[in-house]
Image (spheres, rainbow, N blue to C red):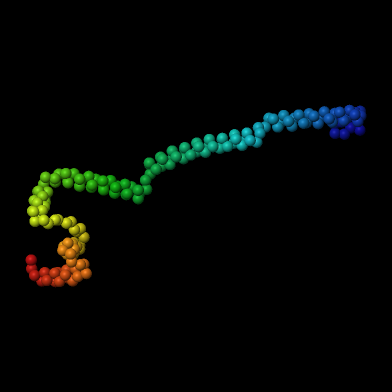
Length: 169
């Protein structure tokens, strides 16, 4: 009786020996395969190194692409902001150049003479912002300097304005 590749003339002892030998061979093959495959830690380390290298390369390439895109393309709003900033810088530059040019001009000399005259009279020039209410602000400032309260300023200003509206200048 021959079954599954086993000759019929083998007795039980030979069959047992053969079985043990096949078991040893199979075990040796399994061990060889285990040694041939890297350990899990080595696989994880190797895999993480590969992933980190790939991610670094990807980040570098993304940065390069982003830099090129940013340099090549500005949005319309960004272009407008850049243009406005450039115009503002140019305006400031022209103003400073004009101020340098006017240093010894007639306005400067006139202002110096006015300041000298006011200084001899013990008076000062105060800058009042020209915002449409500069007359009221100037009157208010004068009243503050003289020590009068702001409560009645409105009435004083109104009376002054009414008085001079009808009279020609």
